[in-house]
Length: 208
Image (cartoon, rainbow, N blue to C red; front, side, top):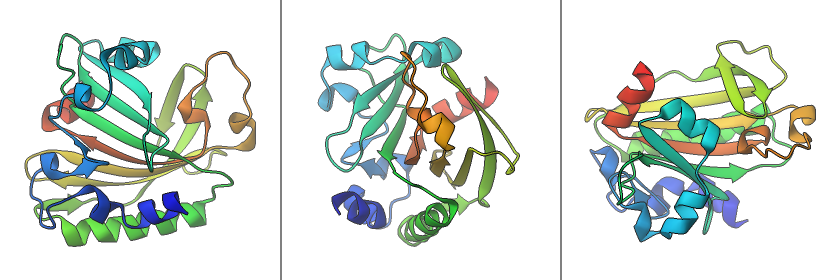
């Protein structure tokens, strides 16, 4: 029940300013862009949770997958690789779902998108997108094709300060859900996610 209520009202729970203009004003369980991850997690927890395959792709940035402390099961936090303060440039809140389907996903995305549009000023909503997902235990590949057994449905919002919010549902097929591998990947499970990115990090991912 806590997770359901949290997802329905997440905009109200995670943002103290009802008319936010900047991506830095958007918070997920009080955590936001520009904060030091050390304010919420200890250094060893962050470093021990770094995603090796993920970080190899980023090079300039590192990403850690750390357990959530409330509504979200996991947080994926990104920061400059050489930043001793672990200043957050990207943050993903992840809720693991069971028996997820596209109807449930679409309903949650629509409700959450409506809340964001009402609360936040200076943002531009983009059209809902569908992606096919091909699973690999070490990497996720996405391509615009809604015909796959595993798929992602997402909605993104661009702030005028160039920050970005992405809401998404990962609806993975049963075979992918049940993969038994020594390499566990959060992407093999059905999840609801909210992804916030700073201007710099958004542009870096776009260009790389």
